[in-house]
Length: 228
Image 1 (spheres, rainbow, N blue to C red):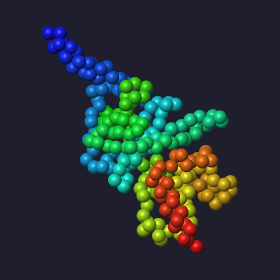
Image 2 (image 1 turned 90 degrees about the vertical axis):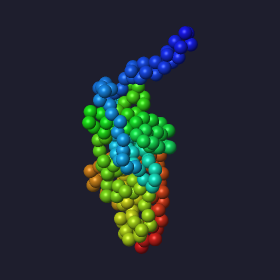
Image 3 (image 1 turned 45 degrees about the vertical axis):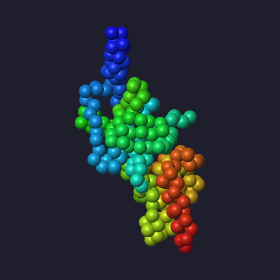
Image 4 (image 1 turned 45 degrees about the horizontal axis):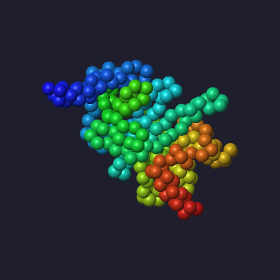
């Protein structure tokens, strides 16, 4: 009798624990009955930017599918000494999507639909989990004339007919997206200060670059050196 009782207790523990889970979307508690699974039909369906957290703990998660695998990046803000926000970035590793499950070295969860809106449910946060709703396209997250230089590996055929100046802008645009500070009054400084999205904040952005961007920078530079 005692053995049967112990087995029943063990079976009920996960059910009871699940029922006690508390999740948040921004600063509002999630209504669990409104959370539905989001089952994507293609490999690229989950691509996009998801907004998570609240207030000073808020951050964006960008997910994109390129060259046969998913890539992920977190963008967040820290307050500078001057009282203005400084944007920083961290790249996720070992990003995998299995069904509607999301896995990585830092964050894990599931793709869901909450109150009719597509999003992602990430384990942890201010509660047991937090929900981030898709809120912008990847083109908006990677602004500029050549967003594809951050989204996919470039080919030699893409670059071969570009001018030296176009190549230079494409390569430096990758750095500019992360707020790299160019030489004052130099050509790149003058060009990017005319772009509404550019925020010069960092002397070094190498830690922010994705593996795709690093490879593209190297390839673009090799083509620049061949141009007159």
